[in-house]
Length: 101
Image (cartoon, rainbow, N blue to C red; front, side, top):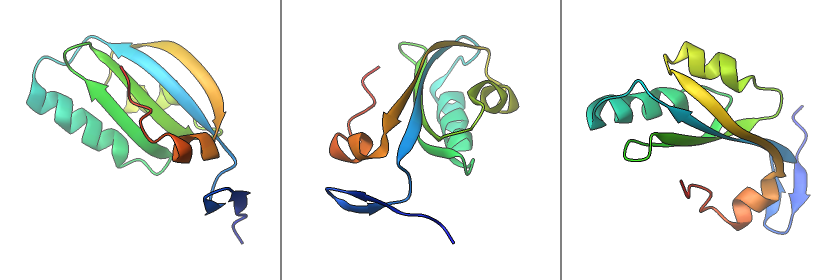
């Protein structure tokens, strides 16, 4: 049975998550950019994801224990990880504007 965690917003499925910021170089147009973001979101380990073509940067919130490098390689990104942080899921709920790239 899945464990749930108390937050000030009620019960949450995660206590902590990974916040990954990365840059990428191999996407050339908005259609490809949208498809890559969509494909990231299809992965069960990805809670939220956003990639921005104009800055060539992306951000993902992942389930703890997920290997971001493996995930980005699987989706065909040429990438460089900028930062990895473990944050509380309550913080994600509190400020759902994590995507300031």
